[in-house]
Length: 68
Image (tube, rainbow, N blue to C red; front, side):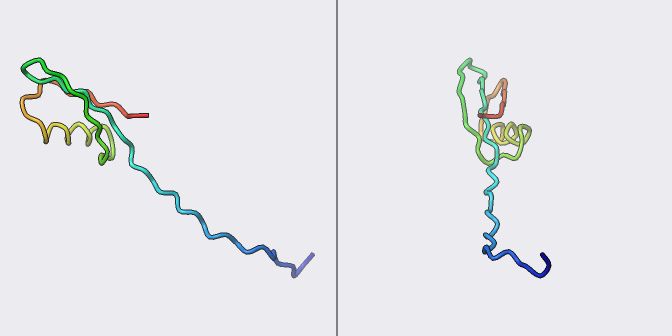
């Protein structure tokens, strides 16, 4: 069947909004307090940890994990 074209209109490609991953950070302070934070604008775990440390003072430990 030469010369035939598909009569269906081609749908425009759907844009898949690429969501940045979301992370959860567990923080322990020098005085023993603990807090959890959601980190939304980081590209990876390392960047999420750096963002948390840049915002907080007197931090003893930070553990960051991808949030599902």
